[in-house]
Length: 340
Ligand code: KG4
Ligand code: ZN
Image (cartoon, rainbow, N blue to C red; front, side, top):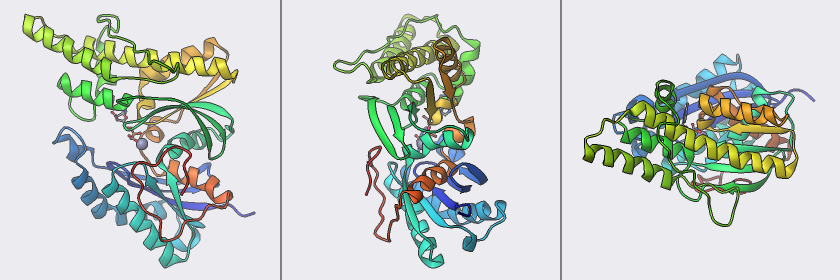
C-alpha cells in the first residue's frame, strides 16, 4: 500500500500547530506558532486570547505545513485534528477548521485525543518502538501513568489527584518570580541551585501506589517562601527551584519504577511538556539503566505541544478504520482511551 500522508492540526492550548506525517512515523513538516510571548504578559494562558490568536494564525500555519512538506491538500490522505482535552474555545478553532478543510477537499476526518498524541510523539522519535510499554505522560494538564497495550489501547495505572506536574512547575515558578511558562525557567535556574538545600515533601496517596499529588508540595513551597519573608531570611530562588524540581522528579521516578517492576517490562516511555525537563530525563535515564530498562523519550520539541504527534496518533486511528463526520465537536474533558 502507498504511504499514508496525514495533515494534522493542533490548537488545544496556546500553540497553533500543523504538520504532515507519513505512515505515523515520518515527519514531512512540523509548524508550531507559539503564543507564549502574549500569555506571558498575563502570567498564564488567557483562554479568550488563545482562541482569537488561533483563529488569526491557523490558515497560515496549515498552508506552511503543506508547503514545507512539498504537498497540496489534494496529496494528503486524511485531515486529523485534536478534539480534546483542552480549552474548549481553542479546540473549537482547530476542529472547525479541520472539518471545513476535510469537507471542501473530500478527505476523511480523524479526531485525535491530545494525550494519545503526546504518547505517539515517541513513535516519531523512535521508529522501532512498538507497544506494549508503560508510559508516563507529564504535561500542563495531565500527569498519568499508563500502559500502552496496543496502538490506541491504554490501561491507566495512576494519575494526579490534584495539580498536574506542569501546573506545579508553573505555580511555583510564579511564586518565585520567574513568570510563565514556569517549567523551562525552573529547569534552567535549578542548574545554579542545590537540590538538597530544602527538604520538600514527597506525597504518598492513600489507596494507590501509582497516583500522584502535587498540591501539598506546591503549598509547602509557598509556606517556605512566606516563612522566609516573615523572618527576613534570604530566599535563594535557585535552591528553591532545584529542591522543588527534585521533589517532583523523585516521585515521578519512584511511581514509574514501581509500575515497571510490577509489569516486568524492559522498556519505558516518557511524554508531554514536562518530559522536556533535563533533570527529569537524566533521573529516568539513571533509574532505567540501573534496571536494564531502555528509556524512550521524544526530543524536547516533540514533548511540548505540536501537531506532528497528532498526525502519528491519527495514522493508527486511520488504520483502525476511525473516521469522523461533520458532527465532530470539541470535547474539553475527553478521557484517555475514550472514543466518540
Ligand atoms: O504538553 P504541554 O506542552 O501542554 C499541555 O498539554 O499541557 O505541557 C506544558 C507544560 C507546562 O506546564 C510547562 O511549564 C511544562 O510543560 N514544561 C516544562 C518544561 N518545558 C515545558 N516543565 C519542566 N521543565 C521543562 N523544561
Ligand atoms: Zn500537551
